[in-house]
Image: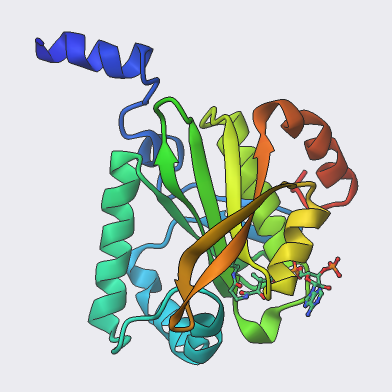
Length: 222
Ligand SMILES: CC(C)(COP(=O)(O)OP(=O)(O)OC[C@H]1O[C@@H](n2cnc3c(N)ncnc32)[C@H](O)[C@@H]1OP(=O)(O)O)[C@@H](O)C(=O)NCCC(=O)NCCS
């Protein structure tokens, strides 16, 4: 197949916009919620991100994937470079969560497992500095990312996989109106064991009315 017709095939059949994330979400762009904004991390953020990862290592290992053995500055810089490559390929979008008031980095959120083929879906994952939890930051971050995914990336379904013990994350999914789909068996290797997860999702056709609620609840920025 000639190169141009293959590009057309990707665009028309798989609807995969080339360089979708780096185009729509360049490094300079911020997605605003009420108290936080999301933006891609730059190499200059490596120091702050490293401190946050070191400080929260034990906390994060309990709830999400194992952290690198040595969280060196080099390792975090590589992670940011990898973020950029994955965003450019449209495979994944990693964003920092920053507080508007003082620009402090609070955590990270990602659209991952992005599929522009017959699923047009992505998973979302997130974490917030343990010291800053229960201030509504993850709720704002997730609603903002989901709005971006439906309104600008044209995805059809956003899903979450949350272990049963993760009451805080389950509370966020329910609060934002994600629907429970059931259990995915032993699908997450967390805290050195395979764990069952509740799968939650929002479909594009459900998004508009949910977005009205999120605006009314002050999760989304003006
Ligand atoms: C999950 C996490 C991102 C939540 O961040 P956060 O900024 O505190 O989230 P929010 O403040 O927006 O919302 C937390 C909600 O959980 C509720 N909550 C917290 N602990 C709870 C518990 N033990 N039982 C029930 N609800 C709980 C809070 O009350 C709040 O709900 P509310 O606003 O209705 O009162 C954070 O705890 C974290 O980083 N955990 C480790 C990583 C992780 O688990 N990531 C998600 C993987 S699926």
